[in-house]
Every structure is written in C-alpha cells, then in structure tokens.
Image (tube, rainbow, N blue to C red; front, top):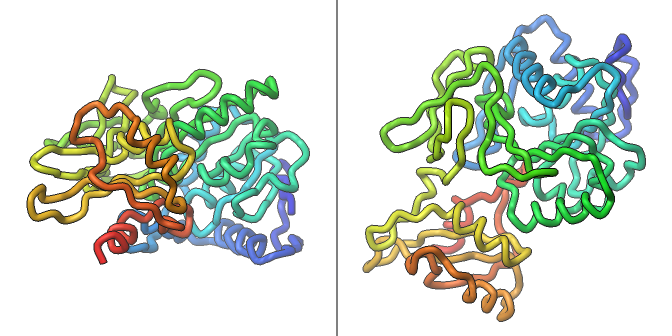
Length: 343
C-alpha cells in the first residue's frame, strides 16, 4: 500500500491488504481525529511496557526536527517498515504527513526491502532489519537506524556494500526513546563515520552527579528528562554514549560498561554478543559473555585473542545460547537474558 501525502487523503478509501496495513489505517484515523493526543507504547527493553498519551503538536515538532536535519522535501519517497504500535513507526507516518512525502507501507519483517526495487529517499530501520537487507540497502538515500546500538561489524558491512555499489546514501544511528518522541540526535555512520551524536536544534543536555544524561527539549516534552545513560559530553551539541547505569557491572570493585566491551567484540565476530554480570560470592558480579551461536571453539578462540583494555574486561566465562531474548521491536532483553543465566 502507498499513501501520497502530497495529495488529499481519504482514509476510508484506503484498502488494507494485511494486518499491518490495517494498523496503519487505524493510526491515521486516530491521527486525524479530534483528539489532541495519540497513545504510544514503550518497548519494554528497560522495564515493564506501558502506554501513555502524546500530544500531536509535539510529534509534529519532533518530525520537523528530523525532516529539517535530513533536508526532506515535498514529494520525496519514504518507507515505513517499523511497527506502528511504537513511537518509531508512528513518527515515520507523522514525518511523511508533515513533509508531504509519498509513503510506501511494508510489513515490519526482518527483510523489509525484499519487494522493494526502486530507490527510497528516506527510511528508518532496526539493526536486525539492516543486517537482513544489505543486498538492497543502497536503494535507501537517507537511512536512520535505531532501536538498538549499531554493531561495529554491521557498520563495516554497510560501508563495504555501499562503497561497492558507489551509493550516495547517508546512514545515521539515532539516539532517543519513547519520551523524546523517537530521536533527538543523529550520528553519521556513512559515508564518514562519527563518534558523537549531534543534537537537533532546540535540544539541550546536561549531566547529573552520576554522569548520566539529562535532556531538555521543550518542543517535544515539557519535562526535564532524566536518563540512565552515562555519556561523555564533547560540547553543548555533541555527546558520546558510554553505557546504561543500570547495566554497569561491578566486578571486584571495578565498574565495567558492557556496551563498550560489546562494541569491541563485535568488531571481531559477526554474532550477537552480550556481556553480563552474574552473582558471585567473591567478585560480587562475575563478568560473562553470552554469544548467540551453537557451541563454537572458533568464536571462543577469536574472543580469547581480543586485546581488552584492562585485564578485568576479559570475560571469566563464555556461554553460547541458541537465541538471545529480545523485545518485540528487536532490542536485546537483558533482564530476560539475566534470568536465563542465573536459573
């Protein structure tokens, strides 16, 4: 199904062909209703999933920030391939409405580009979707990737495939959450990679006494948003993510950021890899590495050969699992994984 927002839209005339298209139509009915808010569901990756109302005016403000940053214009094409239950999918529709884009609807599967043959100006995807769409990723002119961190191995695959296709694509990693109505900043992956996220205009940041990020973005949220994300601030508009405070592992008195170690390991192996701290009588928490794969001595050897910055960064144990638990929108579910590792 395609919706051309550069023309007047008759929602009732839309003919959904599957359940996802029905959900999109229902969201459009909600969007064009008299209500000043729409309901958004959180992913549940850092807690119990919840629903809360969001003002449409603030969603439009957020959409304008993204469209301006990417220089999207009326008549450009866009692809929706994220669930519309969550803010990520809803915002793709709102951006298309605001900037009068021509929106193609594709089911939010792992390979959403499977039936796409023409170039697309703008698309948002998860890392897993990108991983399964590399053969056609050059068709996307402006790609933003969110929902989970983009691994170093995926960044390299993206660069290699786009360079081989002589693509003019621009690829960004996003930073945001449901409360920031998708993202409040982007970090370029391709053509030139960046280490720091750049904030949109109208967004300011500060740190609490833990070194965790606080976000002030009055156009999209009236409250000062306190995160559990420990960051390194370069300047008023740029910061680097280090890890979540609630994921920090305390092993023998040393604080370890699992996200940093995961980025290092994923430069060497293609598999999903998650560092965890499990209870230990001596260390408090014992550092282990969980790899999504069958028992594999080659992977074990590759990890053993990695030169970690500090001796206590090397995992005390490597565990292989067939499947790492994920939330419905593809994020690693660390709480469920910890339960599996401590049964």
